[in-house]
Amino acid sequence: MLLNQENLKNIITSQVQVPKPETLHLPEKVLQFGTGVLLRGLPDYFIHQANQAGIFNGRVVVVKSTDRGDTVAFDEQDNLYTICVRGIENGQTVEENIICSAISRVVSAGSQWPEILKFAASSDLSVIISNTTEVGIQLVKDNIQGQPPVSFPGKLLAVLWARYQAFAGDPSKGLVIVPTELIPDNGSKLKEIVYQLAEEQVTEPGFLDWLNTSTIFCNTLVDRIVPGKPDPEKLAGLEQELGYHDELLTMSEVYRLWAIAGDEKVQQVLSFAPVDAGVIIAPDIDIYRELKLRLLNGTHTLSCGVAFLAGLETVKQAMAHELVAGFIGGLMQNEIAPAIPYLIEPRVALDFATKVLDRFRNPHLEHQWLSITMNYTAKLKMRVIPVLLKYYERFNQVPEQIAFGFAAYLHFMRATRVENNKYYGKLAEEEYLINDDQAALLQEYWQQETPAAVTRNVLQNPELWGIDLTTLPGFAAAVTNYLIQIEEKGVEAVLQQVVSKKAVVS
Image 1 (cartoon, rainbow, N blue to C red):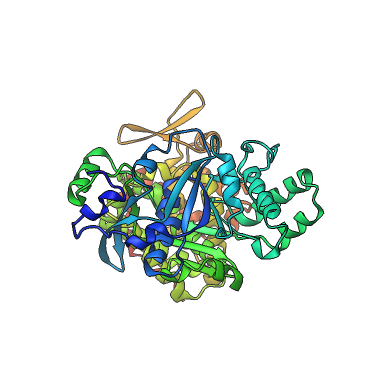
Image 2 (spheres, rainbow, N blue to C red; image 1 turned 90 degrees about the vertical axis):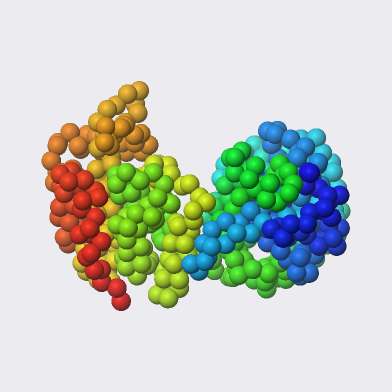
């Protein structure tokens, strides 16, 4: 049995949440650029839940912006799809299957552009959402009269211009634009590009003012791991449990966050927000960016070398390893949380850290440590160095677990072979790729052979870190000591003493 509207009445299993019939015919309030799993598993998930609760009462028109793939699965399933939520929340296992009815239709920008411009003039439309990947928010030469325009900002401007014309510049018909692309200040950057294109291509004098005052571009942060469709074996098991076939079935972790910078007007338009604590609308969302960047991303970066060199392939395996899990938890809660370079209450940081640890323990996610080592050096600079400096400012002593993480980084970056400008390290006679743009420099340092020299040369290089890290009292000595022990004994043998050291927390 195929999942579609006709077959909803035949789904009798208690293992899935079926949408209320009335939600299948709600007005279209949202225009969404992108069909990807993150959008389906986060914004569309929240909108669906709000519709079920009767507090938003609007569906989503999805624009397929690229020529890759087709919309057959959406058409055959009446745009229904299952979100299978799996994970751990507050220490408890969560398993939910939800048939999402948020999407009303999917239209192709390439073949149905006039239909999209027609929807731009709908009085029900109030929100535009996007996820066109990070490269989508870029200024490129474009023509908003194109069928369609080439770029996402060009398409967005064409939609806004069509709306302005349809309502004769009515200031009450402005839209709330909510990009979810993973770049800082995504809304501000998108507005800047759209405004620049408008200055070049729209001669109507009142449009720029309408664009600037009636249309709201929100900066946002999204955080949810949505792997999408599982492998064929897992998919077959899920479909047997659910009792139907779903070509669009989407796996998702339980954790969800959609932080949106906005005022009361934004809250009024995005009326789906109260349905879930994971949707946050606030004037300043930087605190959520800092929490994610430091506690989740920073912990990943400092732990990836440690876990990989301990012979563990995935985050899930690391959380089942007593010593590595102890290192990860201690690092996050005792050294990163109290040194986030932002004014955050300790209880807020520790609460977020607890949620991150639940995410790391998720048995349904296979996050590879080797993948996390990509751009290792740059990630350390962006995610960890500000924390390290703040730690010294607060406690004036060596953060032992951060030092150990740096030592693991140095050992991981020790290339044993170079071929076609690719650098390879070796662990237990198995080669691994060092996917880092500083691999050549680190190899040059390692040719000096002594761990002390490597540590000194790397840490004192301000081009790598923006600062000479050897000026931090005791840090270089601690990293050197750990690096020597790793070289002699291996990571796992040194972990016990690292985990047992107590960090200063206050």
